[in-house]
Length: 357
Image (cartoon, rainbow, N blue to C red; front, side, top):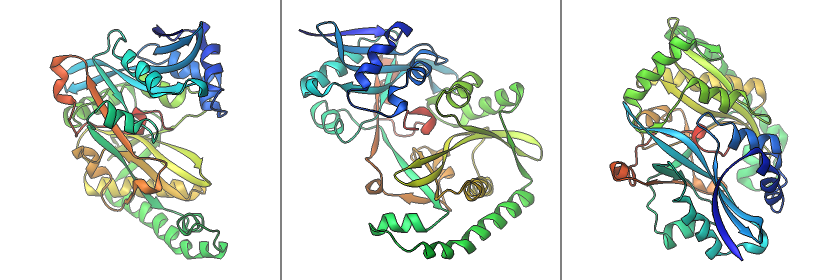
């Protein structure tokens, strides 16, 4: 007999969750016990809550809720839950069991707001069956660095490697523009987090201008980008005339045969102007050239005014058709004070806030 239980992730339960993941996946980001415990047991806002579907005492499905502090207003916080890792054993995949897990999410204790996305399988169930409204969509943007692999992907066949020679002048231009832009605007980039006082100053300004967002903090940044057992990120402090004004995080990833430099997160103490945007992306392009990347890439909510400025030119919008699937975001408030968020489109969200990479 199937039954649903809402339970905290505990170290003693890891083996059960790994066994479930191994029925479908082999990638270490889903089957490595240390990664699973880092992700769901060591988060700075506490351990995750799992909605588990049991069959005769065995977990055959689950939906995990990762607690995060959410800031709907600059001076107000609430307890949100990021829904992740929904999975059913092959023999128990049905709309009914999926619905049981989704309904169980509402029973997670002390969660004011549920936040999640969907994939090509779950999206019709969320939109058509449950009729969840999409608050906004994460959209992809990029700058090409190397042409051969990209052109081969677009053409659907392997093209001559000699095509890469056409990109050499482009990379030279990017390098030169990066150096000139930094010098003219007196912008510098320091590897690592800013000092504690500098980070607090950055985040104070950020909270005032970003709009609704998941909370950033030193503890979150260290957990998310410096303490993972499989992958981490590179945190960079941005300075103008030696004053820290923000940070960003990047990581290198190979996906579908392409090498990416991915902007994972960014926060500034004030709105982003065109000069800062240009210098930032040129700096990332220079990193991409050094790392042998094909594309500099990010995904954000472009309906947020701050992020809209971030992904304006020179970035190129990437159609959802070139991605594995669209990325709609559902915001499901669980108390009346947050009801306005359900269809609110301008939430600040970057890749740091979801579990894609």
